[in-house]
Length: 293
Image (cartoon, rainbow, N blue to C red; front, side, top):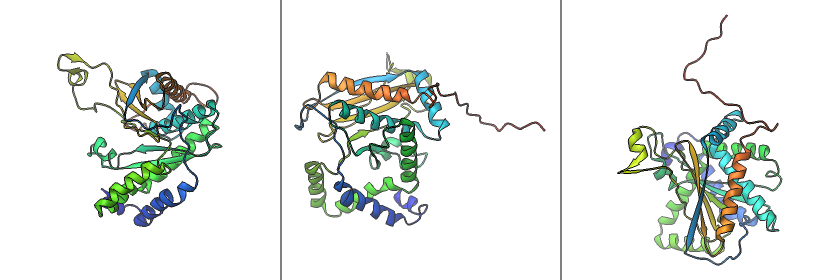
């Protein structure tokens, strides 16, 4: 897939080298903010909580994304930035640079997004000024994610791992160094699974698992101690389910639930236009309409 993308992107290898150099040489000079927590101790024990948006709220968010030329993925990212900003501000620690790691699919339409998401991601960073206005933030996120995807930046991690694996002892040393220093890790991880149970299955296959009926599906993303919290949205039966995974030594159950509620509140804020009105419904048409003469 990387070789196929190389033919479509101008100066592909130069872009890969520039992105890796920025991430590992220059980005650490301005470290990413960490989510405030009660303790910074590492722990293997994790817990989770979950929430959801109803179909009407999800339709409004989709409509909002289309009116500004963005994607639901962009709104999920923008809401994540605003949530971390509010959380840290409420705990007396304003954040300068917040970075969100987002796995993305780099395959073709026939590839499995689950498989391709395992080997690629983009990291989007924003400043405190950019996060002050939700509309401006969404425009910035849309511009940066589209630029990264267009220029194949998601493949940079593929080449980084490839070079590390050329020397097996190096790969383990690099992994330990990244976790020990923490400066290379993003503030938070947001994994958008998109549509769970893709189209093509029958209604019965989608709703039942043996004799049991499936009413909701919540997925959990991995979480490491430096980040402390991971968010994993996914859509099932037109509901947007969000699973939050957290380190139990770093966050209380009430704190994790509060963080999740803040995130859902930020998502709901993107239902509305700058004038405070609900986003108009956008109708997708499969055929072109002719204008009468």
